[in-house]
Image (tube, rainbow, N blue to C red; front, side, top):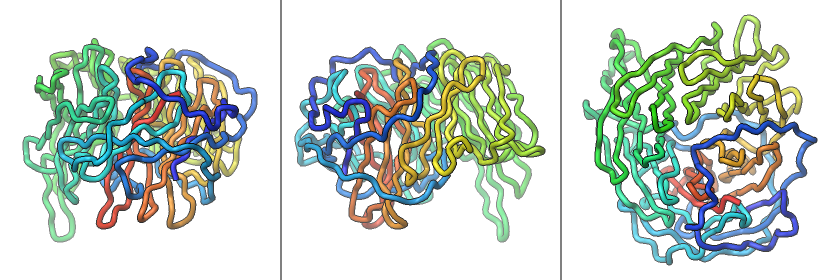
Length: 480
């Protein structure tokens, strides 16, 4: 089942108008919104608006086995969703350079700005994709950049790939690392000139002992020209780990065209904020000032302006803490919620000092909620998710120019069935549309990340249980 559910436009429930994707809305997939709106009450549950055919994919979705695709692990229960009643689309996607050829035609027409959102234009899966994609970003001319790890069991190399609005591969590159060990692209960012930056977790040492081992990794930034030419590689240097210990860094990447920003964090380690220039030179490095006894499952995000938001459970006393830092790593504001005791599921940077947090809040017990913070750190509004069966939901990508943001995850129909779930939330917290996608034969899937293209369309990555192994999935939707 593929369902696009529209909350704000119930009269358009059977009208799925589409047009030329080249007529962009002017939305910047990396921009954020400075507007602050106060909720006037919970939006009504979105109604079912349409069903489209997924095109080339024919299997179910599932969690990314690499562990890189999802930023949240919270389960919210089980349940079922409404049935789809809409119309079908006949478009299929072209295959990527590493995949099998599609038997269908290119998706025509695609959606124009202002059309109903949440309609699947095309999808690709399995061998049509280079691997699992924790990194997505909108590129020039409505293209999309994919970044992740090639499918190769527990091993693999980092990849970056540029695809056009129809899903055809324009160029691709594999990064096997300096040491020839496992490497994974964690994040990707595109600057206004079209230069592509990829954040890679590169393994530099992996020794297995009889009872323990030694593991060490580094964060690496790769810069590519718009045509795919390699420009430079930067490595975040640090002392090697002691024998029989490990260091496995994670991180976020962003660029505003003038500087490139990296946030690095590892288990029980500090948050490091690094600024680079366009040549890969370090402009500054700061350790972010966070409370002591921060829970290991801290959630964080790096905005395109270099600012950071961190949300975490803090001990002694136990409470939820949310803090924002500027592009130099200096604290902007922070809040403590003594009445909250559940670790946040996700965090997102907004423009003008704003921020978002997703988690189980006592304000809406039993259902995870999105909370928006204004530029001064005050709570602007709180909106519960529309379905208690939603699972592993987190923020996907940046905030669109009109203030809309994406949430991605899964809808757990039962202990054996979960669909990919994606939703667009408006700047005031109202649900604009909800998209659900079921793929067989296993029927277990998940959404990993999402991004806006330059026209305001939406690209989402996921993964599904295939017949023999977990496989990647990619889809493009009308943004609405």
